[in-house]
Image (tube, rainbow, N blue to C red; front, side, top):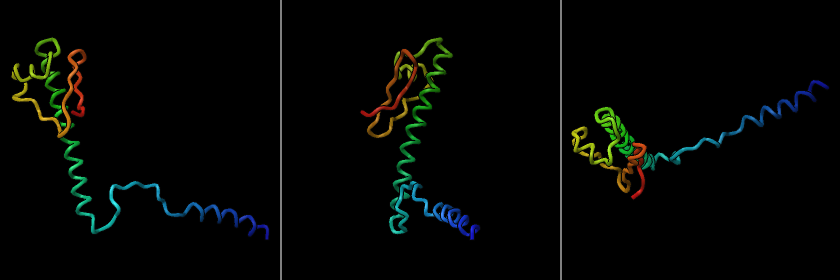
Length: 112
């Protein structure tokens, strides 16, 4: 009888921990009907992120090359094109622009 009384609380704890986990986040509702739209939305977000990252990365690399060649940071991003390091400045993502700080050589992507 004592063994059964000890097993009941243990069994209750085990069963309480076996519930559905609703803490997982998802960008879609899991509905097969909306799956194509969910996929297209995710691809669009990924493309925006990739453009933002690659544009900034190419500017960072060009600034490093400029500094290695000239022993100074460029005064503005146009100097990267004028020096021949970049053929043209990369386009910022829609609704964004690149903000360059000539004192630190840092480039940020900011809203227009």
